[in-house]
Amino acid sequence: MPRSWIAVATALASMSALADYPDKPVTIVVPFSAGGPTDKVARDLAEALRKPLGGTLIIDNVAGVGGTLGAAKVAKASPDGYTLLLHHIGLASATALYRSLPYKTLEDFEYLGMINEVPMTLIGRPTLPASNHAELAKWLEANKAGINLAHAGIGSASHLCGLMYQSAIKIDMTTVPYKGTAPAMNDLLGGQVDLMCDQTTNTTGQIEAGKVKAYAVMSPKRLTAPALAKVPTADESGLKGFNLSVWHGLYAPKGTPKAVVEKLNAALRSALKDADFHKRQEALGAVIIADARLAPAEHKKFVEAEIAKLTPVIKAAGQYAD
Ligand code: ASP
Image (tube, rainbow, N blue to C red):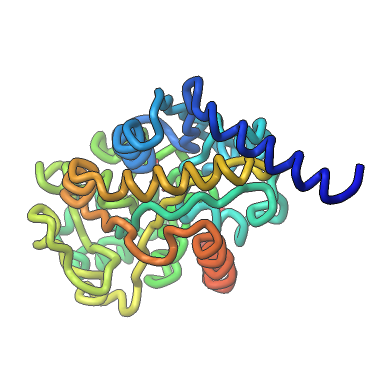
C-alpha cells in the first residue's frame, strides 16, 4: 500500500476510534492497594473525569512489587484507551532502581499528562517515645539494631523516601514492604512497625487526629493545610535539603490512537480545573498541576529528567536497600 494511503487509513482509524470513545467503561489501574494515597488521587480524579470524558470509570488496584505489577499490566494492555495507569514518582524511581523491569518506562506508554504534586511526611507509630525529630534521631541512635521502616514495596515512593532518610541520618533500618501504604499505615497505627514516609494525601487525617507522630514534611516551606502547618520542614528538623515531592501522572499503553490520547489529555485538563477535585486534594496537601507538564510531551520529558535525577540519589543510598 502506498505510504500516503497508509497515512489516510491511520487517520481514519484514529477518527473512528474517537467518534465512539468511550463507549464502554474505562479502567484506571492503580498499582497500589485500595485506600492508600495513590488510590485516593485516582478515585478523586475518576470522579472529576466522569463529566469531561463521559461514561464510567473503574478503579482496578493491581498492587505489588513496588507498583511495577500494575505498570506492567497496563504496558501490555490493548492500546484502545480503555485501560489507563495512574502512577507516581515510582515510575521513575523503579526505573532508576531495578536492573530490569517487565516494561520500558519511556517506550511502552503514551504519556497523558501530569496530575499533582504531593509532599512526603515522615511519621512514626503513636507509641514512639519521641515527640520531635531531634528526639527521634536520639531514639534511633539508641535503638539502631531493631528499627522497622514500612514502605509500599521496592521502588515505591515510600521506599525511595525511606532510602533517602536512612542515608541522611546514616542508620540502617529493617525495611518492611507492603502492597501499598494503606496496609502499612494500619500496621504503623498498631505499632507493628516504627516509621514510614508517606504522601500527605494519606497522612493528613492521621496527623490531624493525633494517631501518628509527625516528624517532618519534606517540602522547602511549611504546608498551609491546617493539620500540616504545625509540622516542621525536614530542613527545620535538621535534615538539610531533604525535599521529596511525589508527582502523579496518567498513562495509556503505547499505540493508543492519537485522537484518543488527545481526548484523554483534554479531559484531564478539564478534570484538573474541577472545584471539588481541588478542594479535596488541596485539603490533603496536594498541589494540582497547572503548568506545561500537563502536556504529554512535557510530562514525558519531566519523567525522563526525574529518572536521571533519581539514579545517583538511589545509588548513593544503595547501601541501605534490602
Ligand atoms: N504511598 C505509596 C508509595 O509509597 C503508594 C500507595 O499506597 O499509594 O508509593
